[in-house]
Length: 331
Ligand code: AMP
Ligand code: ZN
Ligand code: ZN
Image 1 (cartoon, protein in one colour):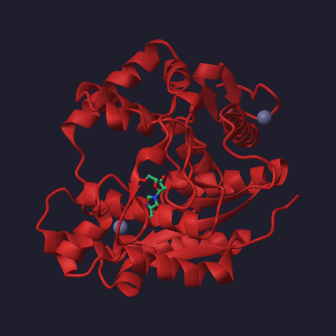
Image 2: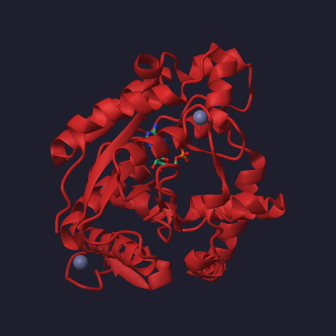
């Protein structure tokens, strides 16, 4: 059998990128993905020369891959970044995730801020769940992670916080919230959410236009270690699975549809159209952004443990960040 050659060299192709009509070898595929992320960063003006970025890394295939992509782009674009890992205290799953993230940070020589829920805040995610007797574990976990990411980005005075959400993640949320007609959430699914000084950090999604399949392949072809354990709390909903199948079917018939949908969506809710969060108030306990007098994180931690933990997150982050990440700008 004659193998298909790479478009750019004589090596055999390892994959076909259908939306770009390209057969690529391992090396050219990696270059292709890195330059696609670079184009995404530039298209949506996510990062500029001299910026300091906090990158949230869970240890899964997406965020581990993005860590390495950011490593090569940081030199090309001229920004610096620090990794943030949140150890949720979910048994073996969290132990392995943390180990993997710390190992990659050591190998790349990148500062790593670890916030350990159990040690730093006095509770693990499973303890939080059982105190609140909630079944909505993923949404509680999301509240904790978003709160910590925001606090760390603000305390380190970073220009932005990056997550490894990819095109497929975002499209599923987009369709789901459209079906549920939840426009508040829908408006947040943009490549860049501009922050407000001292209360909410700017959020960026450098993999806004990268497919799940491609970032998985990138991480695997690079031979990078990642955690492939499912979170034991993960509860895959039939609803989301159906949306995913539906979007994949459309993509199959017309490769590139996912990207054009996301581009049009980003244009509709482009930067100048984003509602400024300035009108939102601050939490009377921790001072971070809140729609009500007390933010959800402070309210829930107070309910579960008799003490709102927002200010503690701030203190911990502050003490950790002076040693780790306040770096001079590069220019
Ligand atoms: P998820 O909410 O699990 O879908 O994750 C979305 C993104 O949040 C990931 O791509 C990471 O960038 C970030 N993230 C998730 N879990 C963690 C964690 N434990 N520590 C740091 N970042 C995380
Ligand atoms: Zn090649
Ligand atoms: Zn608060």
